[in-house]
Amino acid sequence: MSRVSPYTFVTTVPTVQFISNICLRRETVQLVHRYRHPHILRSPHPQPSIMITRFLTDVSASFNPFSPRAKTVRSFLALLPANARQTMKVNVKVLPRTSAEDGSLSLQFKDGKQLEVDLQRLKIKEVMEEVDRHSRKLGRQAELSDG
Image (cartoon, rainbow, N blue to C red; front, side, top):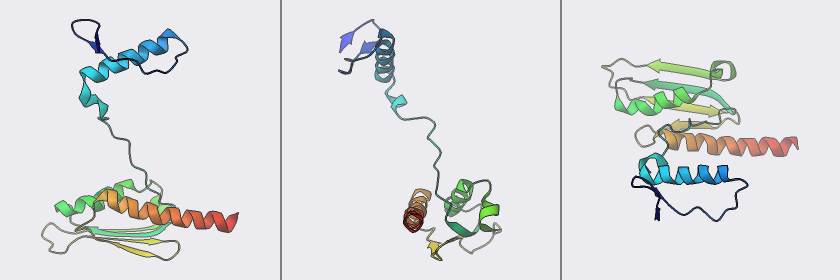
């Protein structure tokens, strides 16, 4: 590292040829900023997750909004598109605070597959992976049958 001023450190610029000095300066400034603020490497605003919902036909959810286990169901419902009620059947049942019944999430796909989500063990990322995995499979089947 070479010292530029008493307050900044500049790492060596990668061996990529830049067209103008402006690009080189931007890269240098970016490296200086990352060195001085390593916590900024992680994005403070993560990109919103997009789930493939094109092949869902039925979503049934029941949850107690005061239960910590309801986070998965609430997050899943938040990820549904705005026109979800036009493209699929959505049933949501909000349980009272005193309910001893656990929440549930049931999904049905266009091919008839029924997916019962285990809310005790799965988090929202894992539910999204399951839905996306089956949706990609249905998408490949649709492409093969069309083409």
